[in-house]
Image (cartoon, rainbow, N blue to C red; front, side, top):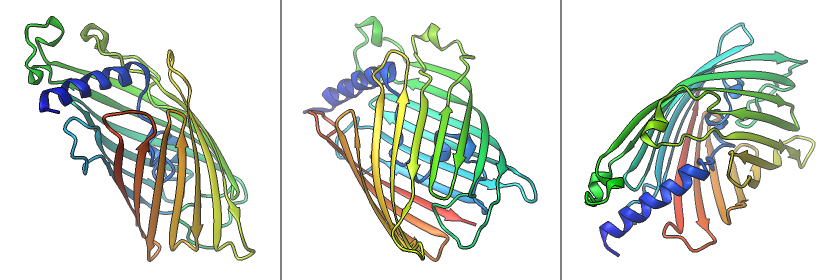
Amino acid sequence: MNKLYFSILAFITYNIVNAQQTPVFSEYHNNPLIINSAFTGLKSNAELSLSANGFMSDIEGSPIDAKLTYNMPIEKTNMGIGGGIIYDRIGVSNINSFFLSYSYHISFDHKSYRPDWDMYKENVLSFGISVGGQMFQENLLELNHTEDPHFDENIATFRPNVGAGILLNNKKFYLGLSATNLLDLSDAKKDKVDFESPFFGYLGFRFYTDRFEKSSFKPSVLVKYVEGAPIQTDFNMAFNYDNKFEIGAGYRTQNQINFLVGLFVKEKFKFVYQYQHALLVSPFKSGHGIILNYGF
């Protein structure tokens, strides 16, 4: 299939997705700050996270994204600060986002006895807020369909947004609720751009397999709600051995499966490879991604 076909297909796909579904980030359990500001500064150290998806695809117009986040606790306080930038592209459509986040933690008898990539502060109720914006661009003239009034000019619009989240974290489970776009502060609708406001809820458990707590199973579920769209649910299961390596798999109700393999290096560096595969007929059948986490 030629370049024009994939560009138009990607454009149509984007509008379907943008009108009904916003992305659920498959790496949310490795970088949850992306969807919930309450995770800001929840570890005892600062953390830098970089993730990328779709860059190895040989199909023109297929989705790609990159995310860079940083967060840290404020010393001798119950607060954390952070921020991030996100790049998303599919076909001729681009969304560039940024956010700054703040959180406040109420701790209950916290005891930290060993470093653990997946162990945030135990017994904490955390509240978070984020502020930022999204720049949306559609380069419709690249499709060379200027005779159609829907394609005769490019679109560019900016939307400020405010997000909020809450998290209850325990050594053996965590429960969170969040929203990334609470306020509609832009004039985007005049450009016929519909920024959706997704709401997230998720629950996860940590089951240790031995009394030394060297290995654990971590089942989790994430539910995303967008007005006017079907509820989307992710079911995931991961196994961690002594913070040396991790493997996992998951299923999304839009008929997509995913797999991940993670390696840990000297308690500070974590590398994760992830693979997603669509079970339904789709021009974007599969995708690859990586996540790099570094703790300071």
